[in-house]
Length: 72
Picture 1 (cartoon, rainbow, N blue to C red):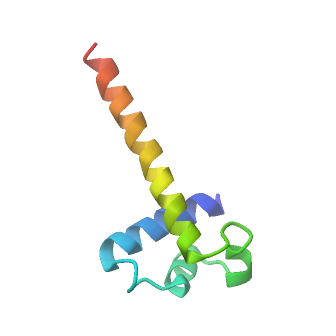
Picture 2 (picture 1 turned 45 degrees about the horizontal axis):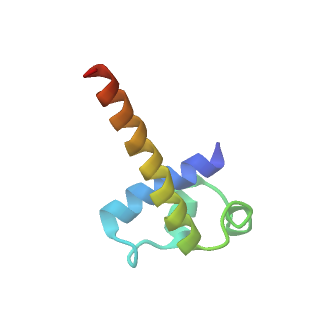
């Protein structure tokens, strides 16, 4: 799914290069979509970052719940 790929590619590039050094064009090139298509998912680069943070919070919570469940 394109939205998921945007989140994952954005996370990877932001983690590697930082927010300011990562351009929207780099993310779009990585995912293989156009800028107008990007805007069907997110209103801006900033909104993408917020969505990545929410996505990561969910992933972390699931990992913790799984780990806590194994320990009783």
